[in-house]
Amino acid sequence: MALPSAPPRPDRQTLSRIDTGALIRDARRYAGLTQAELAAKLGTTQSAVSNWERGIDTPRVDTLGRILKACGFEADLELRFRADVDRSQVRRSAAQTAAQRARSFTSLATAAKVARRAHEVPSGA
Image: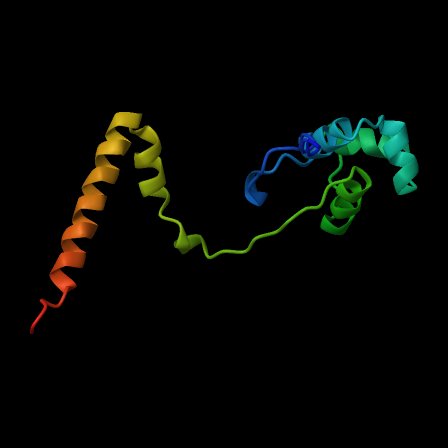
């Protein structure tokens, strides 16, 4: 028996760069709902949904959660210190070709192997 495939879902987005209107529109479309149907589920008007999707109005975070839930989705919020991510390193890696990344990985793997050997205690010592 085959497992059902996962339904399509909106892409993961960073909160500071989120396009709330597009997120709402995509979630609604993935759920197969019209603006009027989503509005009815939320107890609001079709024009309110339209205004959110067009970016004329932005729902509060709790309302956004209810909108996504009505479309069958959950919103996850992950907090992390901005300093935890070295964005310059990410940009450098993204700019590399696949071959350059592979060579870099091989170099790191070799360095790790050498470091492990340096910490090994010789037998009989």
